[in-house]
Image (cartoon, rainbow, N blue to C red; front, side):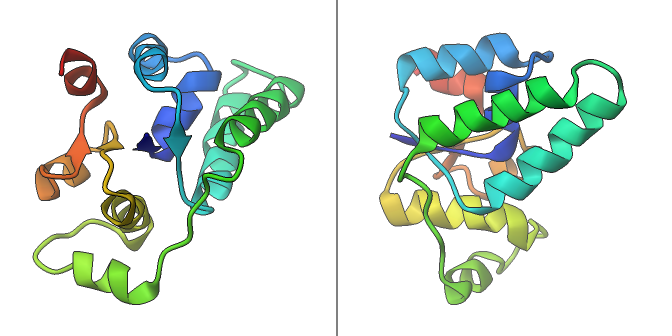
Length: 134
């Protein structure tokens, strides 16, 4: 199992520059988990793609539905103290720290493209290309 941040979820279902590597991660480990926050972040990212004219709202909705089905009951909330404890010594947002907290709680890697998370949490976070190479 891995924790997937929103960018990974978006690239899995909405074609973009990182879709190929993201689908490779999925083939290697299709058991993905996330936080409830993924829904709002996914909608926001999809809205940007809709506004750019790359997809329409129907395609974005279908992509959202596929991710929701993929995650199933593997959507985990985190306690506020966990997020605050992880914030010490870094500038990672509370939003992103939720993904880190879920990975820490589950004892699985957080697969992410986010450079700030990768730098602040090298024992937990792994870049998708590194995940594939391992």
